[in-house]
Amino acid sequence: MNSNKKIIKAPSWFVRVMTPMLARIVAREMVKKYPGLGADEIMARMRAESNPTDEAGRRMLDAVALRLPASSAPEAKPDAVISWRSPSSLALIAANLLPLYGVLVFGWPVFPLLLLFWLENVVVGTFNALRMLLADPADLALWASKLFMVPFFCFHYGMFTAIHGSFVVSLFGGKAYGRLDRGFVPVEGAMRAIADFDLGPALAMLAGSHAFSFLWNYLIRGEFRRASPSELMGQPYKRVVVLHVAILLGGAVTMALDSPLWALVFLIALKIGFDLRAHLKEHAQPVS
Image (cartoon, rainbow, N blue to C red; front, side, top):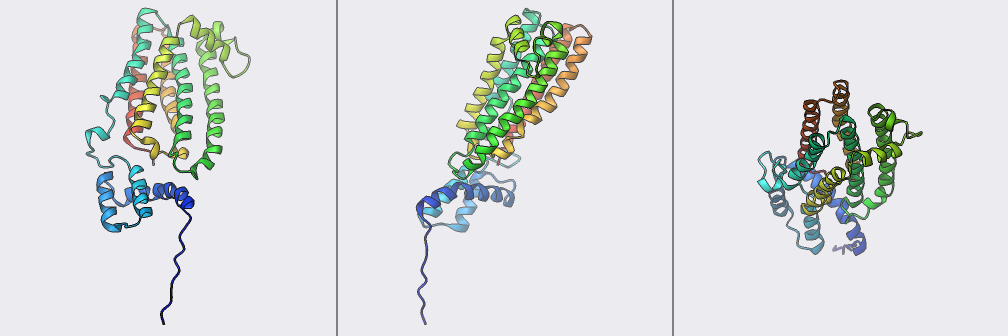
């Protein structure tokens, strides 16, 4: 006896909503299934295995392709991997050399350097919130989690950064700056130091470096398609903890030595090294 099977198709709006989310899951599983292969090789195998004939299937494969890392192989293509010669890396190095100019020309002591590095943390947090907000914008279901995670990150990271800044201003700013703020947010002391040491151009350069990296790596190179807000939430903390523990310890030693030139130059070089290493690691391993 023949039985007619009725195929129920999902509404088109439901398919559009679910495709990005499912594509993210499939892309993650394909990377695990084919370790060492790049996006082109993985997609070739997927097309050979599935060979979809309908429009929905082809759209799903296209969505998966957008969310695969450019290359997960150890020997990646030169244009798929960030190196120290990449535009964003060179911009980072150039921006970090401006504090050296302040030390050599304006005679900056250790406090404005540490304050500048702390202010950069605020810039890092701002762009990280933008990264979280723009992560895989085609995934409509992901926006529901962003409504919670982005404000929570802004609050938590803001508190963390404020406490960190209060230590920088109170410990290294001395009476001239450390006693200007009654709360734990060092707004007045930081603003006074920015004006006194003319930190505006250096801060603008550092902010410009992060803005360029955001545009070049995250938007133009398409990292936003593979980004996960939950993983992005923890990225700035790694930078702050590793980098600034070393910087604060180095700053304390430098201050104890009465800020000799060689110690200040070493402090800047240490910061550039940590920054560049973190930058290369972050963009060499696309967030999934």
